[in-house]
Image (cartoon, rainbow, N blue to C red; front, side):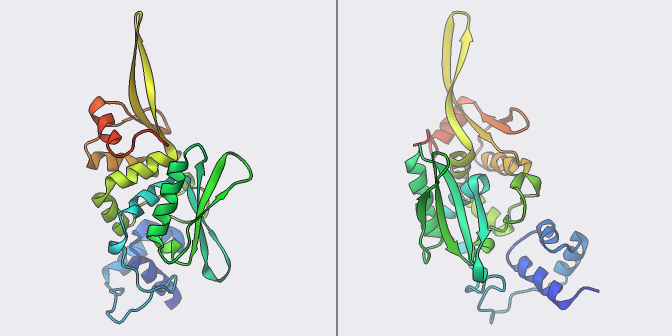
Length: 253
């Protein structure tokens, strides 16, 4: 027999848009049980609900998030994580290469747009030529339900329904964030006899098969052709597809 607290915890996660697998992972309750509970519709949100049961903020309207969220999600999946602090506050950390100040500023701007009531800041790290874009908020685990113990490639990563809706509306933003974090545009040399030909291509590299799938699914939404290079790398090399990515990504700066 499950406790009322467990039922309530699952209900909170259902209202946040998490799927059955993610809820099962976070709560330790079997996916079958979560599925059965969901079908009872016992967690329909009352019009009188005024706040989120997880973070205490006003009930989230994820459909009102700016398009910048899709870009920030891409950066988070690549180079971001959350750390917990006292009184239920979390810190979003996204570490980026100092060689690309434009990306650092674009990331800071996206964080500020997504969390307009919180200050987004940049802090140089003491080790390595990189900087950390960060912000504090109790709402961060609600905005990034992929947060959890362990490295991302060692656990399932799935988008919540509301996140997928944002990605479907703004796949270019997500791909830009993913490529700014774990991707690159480079010139590929090909030699035929005495002649050397060069052409641009994109590569995306991530140890998580789920995150690579999210990248490929976003490419499919835009008709961008991709292929698997090896266990960690996805390549976009067809001229038309590279040109399509160049419209909204281009070289890092």
